[in-house]
Image (cartoon, rainbow, N blue to C red; front, side):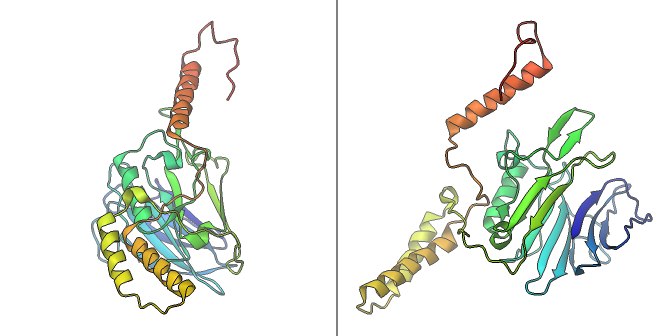
Amino acid sequence: MFVPSKKTHLKEEERFWIRGYRDFRQDRINRKNGCIITLVNTNTLTAVETYTSRPDGETVDQDTECLGIELILPFNNLHVYNIYSPPDKDFQFEPQVKQDNFIVVGDFNSHSPSWGYKDLDSKGEKVEDWAIDNQLVLLNRADDPPTFTSMTWRTSSTPDIAFATDDIHGRSERSVESQLGGSDHKPSIITIKDVTVESDNRKEPSWNLKKANWELFKQTAEMNTAQLKLSGNMQKDAKAFNQAIIDAAKVSIPRGCRKNYKAYWTPALEKLHKDLGLLKDKLIQEPSDETSDKTVSP
């Protein structure tokens, strides 16, 4: 078990300690207090730190705070990155994303309908593009419960999101639990099945045709097919041709960051869903004699 967390009020000289856990921690420099911290259960896991956005001697905080660890497992080690992107800062992710056994979790402070917001802001678009470029899959669902409650504004939102490589996504489940103590964030639990278990229904990430570089695809496909040497065996030659096209697509067409999409969802349904949400919010905030004795069905 490992626990990525963000401690807003913890000062650099203060210790955060839980029996049976080792803490990997990165404190802030240019703010009064706060840090990101990842706890690892030392009874069951061994871990090493692999990345910090504040290396030794660094005196300036990066826009996105990041702390990476590698969990040492019997067969395949797991790379875990805990990040915090402040609301007033741009999103950036410097570590190289590996092709498998890689997970990124944290407080992204970005908006996208993909993880439950009604709007897509510039930061959310940048996060989506980053995930697509690195072939990472979103573990959140759009209809998951919100993870953050602002008592000041009396609103709920989901700044806490998680991405993983396809091999992790295929055997992961994410759930949002009840709030702990006085925290304004709800804990999110990601359960990853045994790394030795292979799923029979794994699917390749879907092609994101909207972001395709068609000119690059054309050039690469022409180059790949021109280099083919026909054997005279129809099945063998067809397989080689298909592979040449797929190889061209891999370098020119990004693959989507979401796999748990709803096949029946359309823009028209999306608009109706948003309109219904707005009406329900208005009903709650501005009840009238006409509506106070009526029930609104979900």
